[in-house]
Image (cartoon, helix red, strand yellow):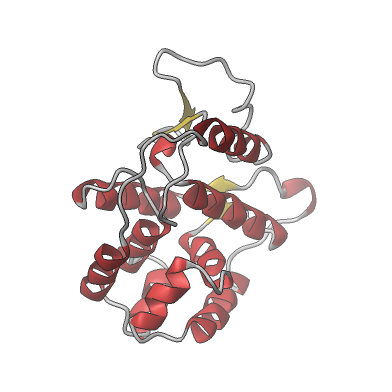
Length: 205
């Protein structure tokens, strides 16, 4: 999985989930953190999709926050870097697969949401399921909301710089901005993901 194929919004989603986990004293980023961040963006595509699927985002947000309160916490010397959990790694890999299957060039918020709907090991997917959010409905809504895949534009240098600066401030990508470019122009992420120095902004979330 390559993080240069994630939209800027999707990269920001992971970074904001990391910040949320850190504030709560959680040692790992879970899918519940990703969903909580999506639901906090009242004008975002995820909230819009969920409303159209008949869910109430405000109620979902409250339920997700209650689930976060039940997660194990660490503090003091025991609190190190907040890392991506195996569950979240699986969600991001599934989002990448969803984008590929739909022949979308970049992994968007919609793809990540669809992957969370499919993830049944934790509370995030169960909360969505109880609200009547199904894979079939989410897939149809995702395809309807899809815009044309982005191609490099004159603003690419600006967006690349934004991605680099954003990633450099997060412990998720330690040393990323100053790393030496490899022949593929990428840096290892989480053992299996790959993160390039930036991706062009797309018209999708």
